[in-house]
Amino acid sequence: MTAKSVARTRTQSRETQVPNALSTALNPAGSTQIKRYWVDALGSGFLATFALLLFVYRLGWPDWYVWDEVYHAYTAGQYVAGNSDAFVWGTTPAGPGSMYTWNHPPLGLHLIGFGIRAWGDDPLGWRLPGAIFGAAGVGIAYLMGGVAGPE
Image (cartoon, rainbow, N blue to C red):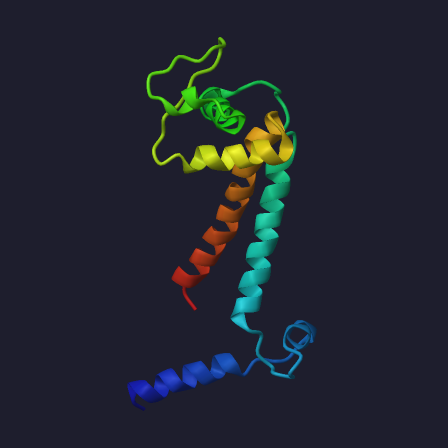
């Protein structure tokens, strides 16, 4: 038996699986094989949704700046408010307990700013964009593991 015929036999054995209710539901054309992309899509979607549920639990507490929110959430709120001082390096903020940050490129600040525009300048607006992207990262990591893992 040659290497080509062994590979062909392995491929054929993977394709001939016993049909079940899930394969019939996902493949209404009557194929006996569950398409891998359906399993991957459902798996990554489930994990991302579960991660988002875990991340948003008590997202609004505490209701003050925590850790780097002193920099990032405050500066993003100033971007949204149209304060030009937020764009100038070395500017001192008006209030105590907060500082500007001058990250470049400021993509993260603009994403937090989108959350502030959508949900208000409060803990939900500061933290929800990060929770959404973190949950998406969990789903992407699952998909990358499936691509890199063994068949």
